[in-house]
Image 1 (tube, helix red, strand yellow):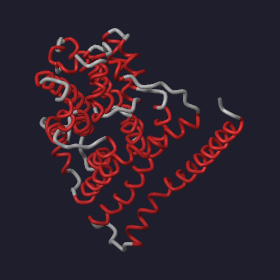
Image 2: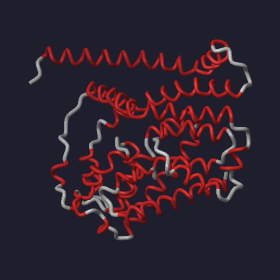
Image 3: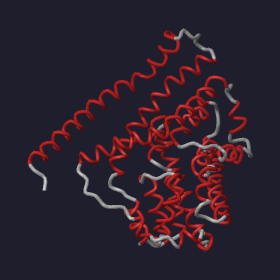
Image 4: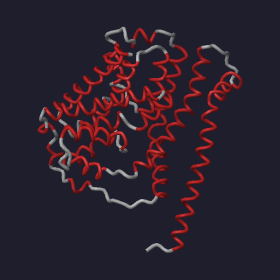
Length: 350
């Protein structure tokens, strides 16, 4: 049993954490609102680069977007990290295993937004879902949604491009995850799961449930920030560097010719460009921001972003450990078809 001394220590730690969070949010807001002036001063006064030059425009973009994306990433990951402390793979599997197929597709896609899983978690999650009796199509709805329509993508899209683009991405991503999972479920491809997966005992995959206090959840949020920053910071820097190059050196209208709505090949070309790339939402969104700023059509850019996140070659290599080639091929065709449909649709209506 906990003593009064232990309770006092816990309460003191909680108050200290709350004080640090409050102070941090205030400082975060002040710095975030000052970024345009800071980046402009650093580029043209501190570095003395000529205004209006290509290199100046690129450096200003880089100095502005790097802290902006990092700060957005920090606040989003910390907040959602606390929410994620309520979810475990075991809870997710138990929830999905009792649902009818279409309802399961919908719930699985929605859970993918808020649960802490990415393509690198595909193998253990797939094993757990299959052995827990979750239908194959429902499993794919979750595995498509989790890396593609996650809180980092939505938070950064909202912060950089506004709520309309974030809402469009959310709606279309969920549509692809739900519809692709439903189609795969209708094809009865359970025999194309590797045999060793079916023989795995689900009970060995259960996670121990813990009763977490508010202070524990705050610590969980900090841990999530450290873990995700360690994974994505390099991709963020590389993505912003590419975006800065596009912003400063690519002439207005060039991207409209390659990824514009008037080019019938722009959407499939965007998908073909995206698939070989390996990045995550945090790394690809600065590139998306720059492409849109240079005249690329929203549908083509969404298709590019979705293909990078949901159909990357490394993810397919990981999935090969648990899926036979035919099922992987079906997965790629179905998801690609959904991405192409979304790309063409938004190029037509916007």
